[in-house]
Length: 141
Length: 117
Ligand SMILES: Nc1ncnc2c1ncn2[C@@H]1O[C@H](COP(=O)(O)OP(=O)(O)O)[C@@H](O)[C@H]1O
Ligand SMILES: [Mg+2]
Image (cartoon, rainbow over all chains, first blue to last red):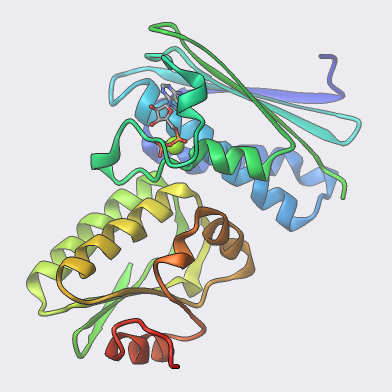
């Protein structure tokens, strides 16, 4: 897509970078002067996607997480991707409360949060290649 | 995180943004405190939390399981509108009480988390 404005980010898959990732997106969106609840929804969705790449995609192994974020006609488009283990069954992974790591106190609600806080969420994944999450949300009410 | 003990309640007051990074730290701190201290109930005071993702839900549910095994309850106090959206969506408030204040939560623990009839 031909965005009016966009940025890309690449950072190490470390949980301490989750805050950096969602702050980067929210600071980028500041000039669009959106509502604080919309901003919080976007930050939450970014946090979920980035956390998944770090925790599930790489499972503690070295790697990078990528964010591409663009704006067009007052809609923000965010792509979060990793080159991690990939998802076997995307449909099952997206079911509310499903987690492959119940022992680690994951709630299984990451995708549910992304889907209810954003206007659209699409997931592409290839086993042992990686996962790509596309999300969008209107910055207007 | 700040915490204090009132009777058999551990009152936990996280500061800042609860994501998986901070949730892991909080989990360890709460577990350590709960082991050292003689408590049965855990009360989360969310007044200093300005962001939370689903990792925070996992954290609270984990503590709920712990206090249930001890015959106590886990409660959440001072939830902002911002956090309320996530808490409602997750169904968390169906298993743990949401209280306006920490004092109200302490009263709840004495009734085993049940609402007054
Ligand atoms: N980037 C990813 N790479 C590999 N697996 C993933 C990724 N994102 C999600 N998953 C899988 O989808 C499941 C559900 O994700 P989610 O709804 O966020 O719940 P949770 O993170 O609490 O397990 C995860 O448990 C994991 O198995
Ligand atoms: Mg998740």
